[in-house]
Image (cartoon, rainbow, N blue to C red; front, side):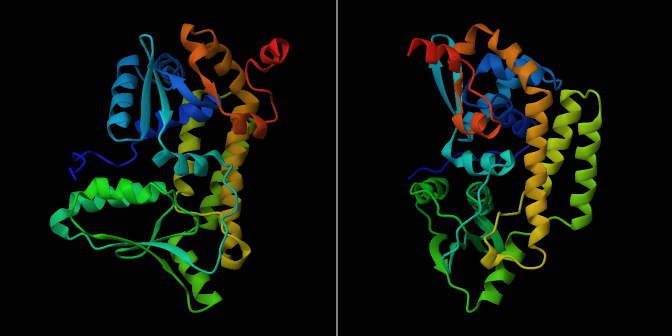
Length: 296
């Protein structure tokens, strides 16, 4: 099986900003012109947006289709786990007494393969327990094994299994080590920034998304753990998750309407596919819902 060509797998700020457009619009499919319109407010040129879209498609993070001469993009299944985590909508994980585990024994001579495997695994919620051992709490998609095999070709170095802790105390210790919550002082600092921004009479896209990115990076390793895996420090992780939800709500209350009006005026607006889950969470009807009801 051929290997995927080497690529830069780190989620750069440009890639993060581009993927955030799905959340900005409450959409699961977005045409290229809408990405350009949204990201222009953050200083991106139309050319830089097109180049980043091409890179993310090449990396398998976005899926591209066409409608006439317009390209339309969706998140790949690989990207969905991380997207839900940063949307503030992730539900508590279930725990059945074991952890899903990924054993990675790819040698240093194949460091590129190893880095790509670790990158994809992180998107699916795996976090390092120790060197070469990653664990996850949530069930993994059926095609994850195929994705990882495609990355490394025919050579071995990946094994899927389950790890069963000897005791509840060990399970909590593993969860604490792998799904590290940010420091409490960091959560409080970010919470103060969210309150400050929310109290401001107005703020710009760059200011908002600098904060959004900072909060997202703070919770990058956390998981919404069930009570069985939580300990005295578990509350910090929960507060960090709620903080992300508060940042998303701030966008919905203060900036969504203006951004939506701009995008709906684009000729390609009809190609947007809306995300029902997003609109349910913000307590608003999806764009065009009134028209669809009238037609029905």
